[in-house]
Length: 303
Ligand SMILES: [Zn+2]
Image (cartoon, rainbow, N blue to C red):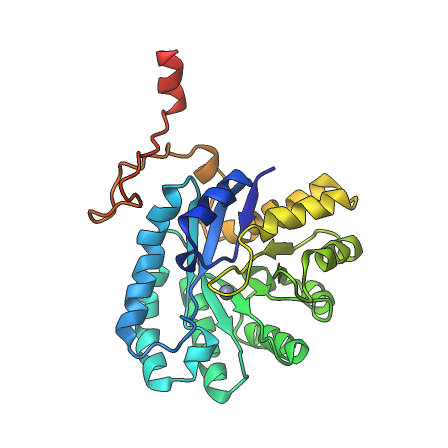
């Protein structure tokens, strides 16, 4: 079975992760722009981060046979630094239109401060202007109210529910998100409330329509194999294979292919891995023998 992890911060992960993910069947990832674990002190570090999302990280993933897409946005925590936020807003249109950018995100609320609200709304306006999808980060505290309000604000700014992926849902929020017609994504963190056993029960109860599973793996305690592991558990617990495929692959493709930037043929007809390639003169290798795949057609000729 093929998988998509539509929310994972690969910049904070290792090449071992890329290898394990590919082996487990992950063919594509979406890396949302977010914070650093500590506040950025200048717009320059934002600019370099956006550049790495559309540049080096995209290359690095391809070197391990995974298609990499990203979202561009000002995260809610850093929206609270208004002098910085103002400068980041000026950068966003430059990066939002680059190849492989599938949405504005992850944006929304953290503490639901006035500054967060202001920059959330400005970014929704930008998404509307550029006709882009939006990936919403719902707050970890006061989640139910924060999720309702995030959806209210999206509608207020004229976005269609089908253009908005609401992430970090749980049992408290899922019903409202689905009833209102938005995509409902779930982040599976190891050893937490929203673990994969709970996810199985959500799919059993709500079916597979518009539900998406992701790992949100970053530099914290998280699991880059959360999607394939959750799929395995669903199958073991009797969820039909078609439903598992929907929530761990097809729905992410349906949602994000609306951007025009992501399509199944990107990974069904991939360019062969060639680790001799360089990005701005730099390789992922440190003296190892490069993996060089032979294109299928050429391989047939050699045979
Ligand atoms: Zn995230």
